[in-house]
Amino acid sequence: MGTRTGRALGAAILTAGVMTMTACGDETAPGSARGAAPTTTSTAPTTGTASPSGSPSGSTDLEARAKSRFVPLETMGEGWRRSQPPQAGFGLTVCGVDIEPEEPRGAARQRFARSAVGPFLAQHVQVHRDGLATEVVDALRTALATCTTFETRGELASGPVTTFTVDEADFGQVPGDTVVWRMTSQGPRKVTQDVALVADGEFLVGLVSYGAGDAPDPAVISGAVTAVQRGD
Image (cartoon, rainbow, N blue to C red; front, side, top):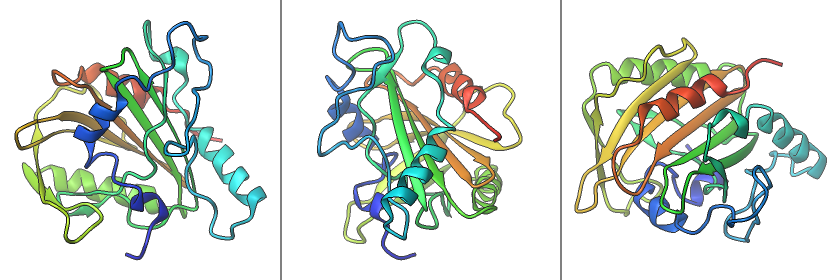
């Protein structure tokens, strides 16, 4: 599959436990304007990968196109605010399906939070060749129909194996361009996440709902799927 710049920084879904711990205190500081852009750091850049050409203008264009699929803050409901963006990339093999099978041509990401310990909603938007997003969503939908558990090592072959169970959850009516599932990491500290992938032409949109305590409210991921900006 080759080297992926975004995936080298760590799979956002695989490291959910780490995300939950490092997210504490990362949300927009109290007293800042609702909807204001969060302060960025060198370890948490606000945008994703550059275009293969390395052209700054090309990278900016791809990033802007990716951001056009962002969930608007005003659709998140009362109490939600912008938080520090998640790590780049959401590479993970789920039930035998690689959800980031190719290096994206461009990407952008954002995260919302209701408090320092969650709940959180992270969004990744990747720009790919036309058709890839639909291929991934269709393959994963088929796999999840019979899959109840899976294991992954993440990016490094020598990395520890993480086991996830695929759990039941009521996500209501799921659009035809979307696949949604609930997964829980197994081990001393279990973390449950609701995950959705949306296929929209060249865009593959990933959404992850999680928190530091109880399982997330399924309505959060369902609402975010509906709020994803689609079309031209």
